[in-house]
Image (tube, rainbow, N blue to C red; front, side, top):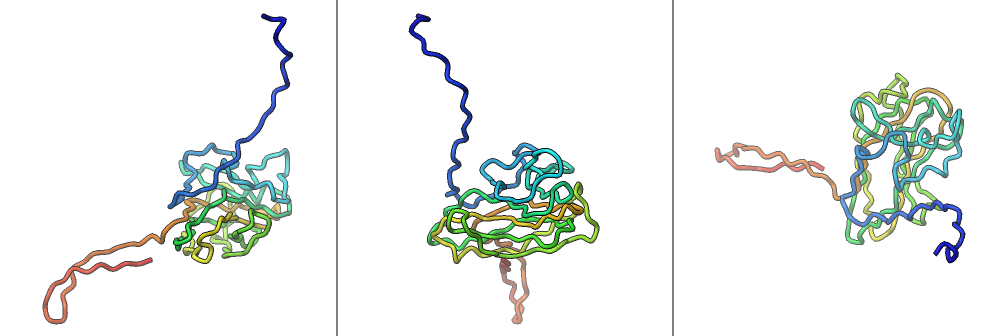
Length: 212
């Protein structure tokens, strides 16, 4: 009965820990995620920059939608001077794997190059993998324009380790934005073209040209 009930305790909010990624290829195109949010299980909280007005971490790095395509954006026009970074979930790379990291990007910001980094100690320290300069002389924070597919980055040296990948920029409260899409970790993608080639003795053979 009512006399046997205890008092209600205050509501408590909590977040369930994200599981590490163990299934590959791992591909994120951001299409199913909520616009104007930080992607679930991604983390930009180590950034030192803050938004110009209000507390809007999704504008440091967050899901952004343009022309029916979703991506993540570092909104350089709306953040103060400081580091703007976002970390992926942990990825458990198999010991026998020679995986690559690939992604598409459009750098239309005034803040200088952005860098892809990797951590093997849970995000305490990071090592630079590759840096990317502006892809367009016209700064823009709404329209990513044409994306560039980054040259594949080999993760073979990290096989058998648990890693975190990071997209890192030095925001300058300047112009434009950096856009990233189609982040993928997995086996190298091969493009196979099959054609008939006439041999030097007049024979016709079927050959496959494989490019990585």
